Length: 342
Image (tube, rainbow, N blue to C red; front, side):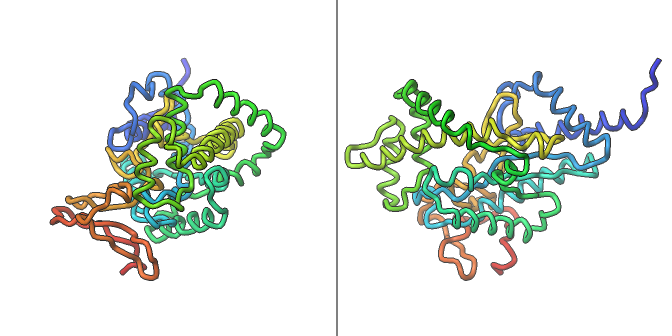
């Protein structure tokens, strides 16, 4: 009979306990059924055991925080991270603390910025992406989270992994055009149209106009006076389809982080989907502005939804609000802002 060594048992138990934290409803976004837990559980546990066996922090990766979407109805005048991103950093910190309580080595969170890869699709300049990433890194440092949150540029990781996408781009572009034509007018196509419009640069329009435009996008088309914008959306749909294929076909994560669970901010079968701000807050930080609700809890809302019931709060030297506070007596402890704001 083969002896079972104590370290192996400890690694097994530690992995099980960590996994139970990761799939707790406070952190897991999708349902266990949508996650297809029975099928993905063995692979995720095996990944966790490779870390716990060596007594190393477990690792999660997530493709996130590209840039504030250039949509005034969503983010107002803000182009840099705000309280929404800071709340996400603190939420990830609470997840790390929960893991560390049952597994002392804790958790590493590797954030892969894909802004440099997709910025051209949506009309964003490289300088704006760089400024967003630099500011975000500053928030991580100021919130004393740099020891467990690490930021990476997705394109640089591809290069480091030896990927050369140039020879595949034309084929991927042809496939994207075929997808666009074959699915035109379908529910999937309309959903893509709506999502693409929500990411594309529409700063030349007023908040009121963008709000109307976004309502029309549900049907997959815009009024005649926005024909030029509709054409831009069509082109961006194809371009994003190409870049999404590049991300998945030339994914450096298995090479750069072979012992990590590759989490997602979307609900996808077989993947660990996580809340980015807190349970029930589906709007991603880069798609809105950060607020405190009437109970002092962090939330992300579209800028167009911020009314006179919210008070804007600024960081010195910045023109756009860093966060909004709902005008009501808070019954909880306030969440502190970055030190530079005091």
